[in-house]
Length: 87
Length: 370
Picture 1 (cartoon, rainbow over the protein chains, first blue to last red):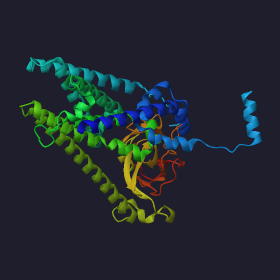
Picture 2: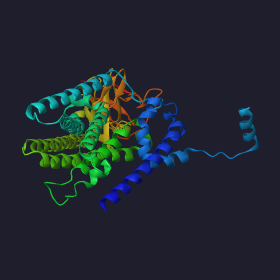
Picture 3: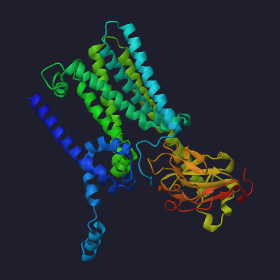
Picture 4: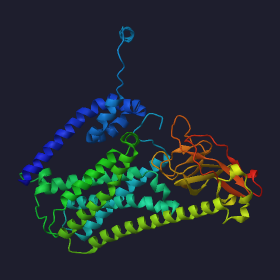
């Protein structure tokens, strides 16, 4: 019984940490700089250093990252400007 | 901070600190193993290494917990505080190595997953002498990991200060868990009371240091509050001529005599529910809130370096005139108006918004500046 409980807990922990890794990669490439401008130009060493913490504490960073995504209303001018920029 | 993050903001002091730390750890491990084999020639190398790493981590944790109160009691310990986070990371690394080797040595040879084995191999929770001490160490290690993983300033800024501080206060829980881990482990492996006694002495020492530091802090605040109260009523400072203050200056409170503040150092005073650090530098006096924006370090226990108030904890700097960090940094602390009268330093207890420029008081402004 105890073995089953502990094994279940370890599986849950593994799933949680795997989700953390999946979150951490895009977060450190893009999201960290959105929630903290000092992280935008952060060095590789910085990203490597905070990676374990992001994997472990990713639920605490989901909210700030989501809130940082400013949704600007689309307009013909904005769309045209973005399209022109891509060309 | 207002600049791009790096892994470590290296400077000469940090390099020296870390080299001394690494040298100290290597010396300790070598000494422990050497003495251990002399006393217990039959012990295996793995067991000796596991014990050396475990005791090393436990001793480092004592140092980590002692530095704060030691600096409160005696400022000569401040250099230890400067890079305390690296001590914490080193504690975790030693603990991780200890746990990793112990996992392989004692739990990897059975049919069970070693991580499962740690939690289920000893079910004697009803026995003190045979209590399963390993899970206590695992939980403590998880706490030390969270602290080490969040030691970068990125986490302080983005978890917010209250969450970050609460997380790092768990170090005391980790310490208690490790006291249990070590004590119960020693009970099962040792017949000599020496190690158990050493754990008790370490715990009592830390408790005494914290109580001593707390008492000295209370004494400082009481003394300063008494001084400001007396100055406000003019009753305790008749020689100051406070009764002759102009109406608009009557709110100023006495801090101390000009001569009581050393050049490039500060004097603390408690006003408006918190401490103010009044600095003397280049014949001028400026006052800022005592709490550094970084981690609430005591600015008043720092000094003026290159014209900037420098926090003794991590070296964050502020201009005395406006309490703002120089570009490109963005930290700011509240400022206070200062006056010199009759050789006394006085401050307006009303805090000004962080970063507000305030004209410094000049020693020559008041008569007989002492």
